[in-house]
Amino acid sequence: MQDILDEIVATIGASKERGKVADYIPQLACIDPNQFAITVALADGRVFSSGHSDRLFSIQSISKVFTLTIALGKLGDAVWSRVGREPSGDPFNSIVQLEHENGKPRNPFINAGAIAIADAILKGHQPKETLGEILQFVRFIADDDSIGIDEKVAQSELVTGDRNASLAHFMASFGRMKNPVDWVLGTYFHHCSIAMNTEQLARSGLFLVDNGRNPVSGTRVVSALRARRINSLMLMCGHYDGSGEFAFRVGLPGKSGVGGGILAIAPGKASIAVWSPGLDEVGNSKLGTEALEKLVQHTGWSIFG
Ligand SMILES: NC(=O)CC[C@H](N)C(=O)O
Image (cartoon, rainbow, N blue to C red; front, side, top):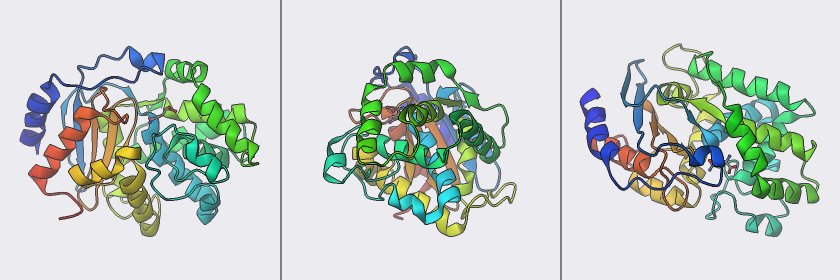
């Protein structure tokens, strides 16, 4: 495994065509695109990394997997009255479907859906308390108490977040927000600004590898049924309007973020985190996707055989 990862770093990680860093969030626009890391956390507890795997990056929309998991724990199936479970086929920050579908986002991973989930888990609490809860959960699943929020990124999103504010207010106009919109947005921007390295991120996905149980510690995080469902949503919706392409090329449940990270799950085998800040046209890590494609070719881990 170490040889495979080192080869991926030496070839794909050194590529000249690196995509474009997200520039609509000023704090992400200044990230050096020449960084690259990959970590594979195997179900048997062994962890392999190559590249800049100790560097922290903004996990952005990957955090939506964690907030969805928390929401399912708090609300159970009532979550599905707030968001759907169909791929949107539209960009992650699109507003167009919301009007036709009465303010109910297609799935929990597009921005509108994740904002609805943030509203659902706030449940009348202060954003600070909810963020504390989200962080506690992420630290628990990654088994790492040092994980925190990059406040500079959160502020940067807040001052440039007109599109997300529009989505939230639009949903509120359908009576779909139960908390003040600025609380919901504050919670959303902050959980997107959680900073992790690929080692921490790969460990955090282990509960989705082994039927809802961390295979290393043996701790149950969610039921087997719930883990399966979260994986299915990641496969169908985790890369927005690039989800079909990701399934075609990689064949694993995955969730991307505009910070350039991707968390991918090979059920029964491994949790994988890659990071390369340059994005493709739809906002998914360009080299991250290529690296996963290569890894799956080497290991045969595609869920499609
Ligand atoms: N795709 C993403 O990672 C988007 C998350 C980002 N915080 C936003 O709201 O735009």
